[in-house]
Length: 274
Image (tube, rainbow, N blue to C red; front, top):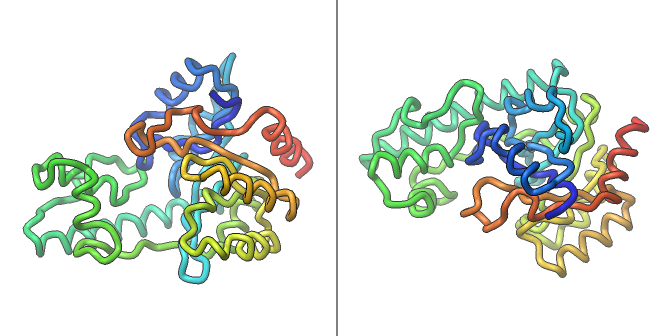
C-alpha cells in the first residue's frame, strides 16, 4: 500500500463507497493520506472537517475541462470548500449534468428504454452522470450488466449519447488556484492524442497548473517514466492515486496506487508557501 492515495471517488459521484467506508478502508490499509476527488462535486468533503488519529484527508475535487476539443480532467487539492466561487461553480456543473441526463433519458425512450430521474437512485447532493443511467438500465432489466449497458447506448457515437458540458481549462485552473488549491493534470496517459501531452503541460503550466498525476493504474512503466521526466523538466509537482471507483473497474483497491512520503511532502510544502 502507498503512503498517500490522492485520487478516490465516493458514492457522491460515481464511486461505490461512501466517504465513511473509504476512510475505514484507508485506515485498515494503513494509508496515511487520502483525497476524495469526486467529479465536479464537493458534497463528500464534509469528512475533511473531522480529525482521525491515523489518517489525514486532503480536500479535493476532479473537474472535467475542455482543451482544443479534447477532454482533460484537472484535480484540485487543498481546495477551500467554503469558497463562494467554488460553490457557485459546482452548483452550475450539477445543473448542467442534470440537463444532460434528461436529454439522454429522452433519447433512450426512442429505443423503448423508459427511465426517469427517480430511477437513478441519487439525491440532490450527488453528482449525476452516465454511470447512474447504466446502473438503472441494469436494475430495470434492460441489460444484464453495467458494461454492456454503457457501451451499447452511452458512449460517443451510440444512440443515447449527449456531449457533456465542460469548463474551459483556464477557468478551471483559475478557480482551483483562487480557492487556495493546487491544480494537477489527472491521468495524462488517457489523453487521446498522447503526442500532445508535453505541449498541453507546457501551456497549462503557463496558466497556473502546478502538477501532474504521474502514478495512475492506467499508466504503463514507460508512461510513468515519461511523465516523471516531464514533471522534472517543467518543475511540476508529482501526484498519484488509485482512481478508485470500485474494485471491478481497474482491479485496484484504495491505496494500491499513490505516492510516497517524500512526494507528498513536496505538495504540502508548496501549499504552505501559498
